[in-house]
Image 1: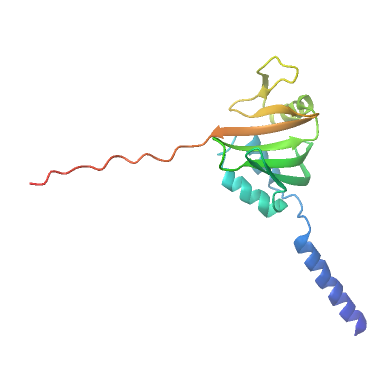
Image 2: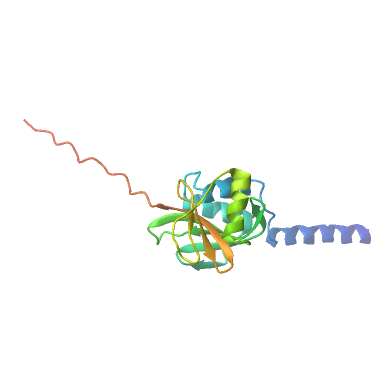
Length: 168
């Protein structure tokens, strides 16, 4: 009886710990975040925010108009992704971005190899920005790469003026 009680207690503790421990990377990460970062999908910061909270827990910092999430164990295009950020509502852009644990050159090669998307260097600086159609960009983030998709916020729909009727 004592052993059974100990096993039940151990199972309860394991369940309790599992609820607070970091969740594993979802199988949809590559499809959802990968397509979002390549601007192949509708960019909706509310959607990405909820997805990241659900699968990685609460954001760890709020900086630069974005919520930052740690994404331990995540990878895209065969490259480790350590952080993902999604815009808040203070920016004129809606964006989703990620920090890759590699150089921009190596990230670009990995994307070309796995997806076929090619990037063009759009400036002549020592740390050039790379851009792909429709608007995905890869930039330097210290010695790492940051990839992001940013789009202007859509304006609210314009309502037509009310139709005036003549009263007779």
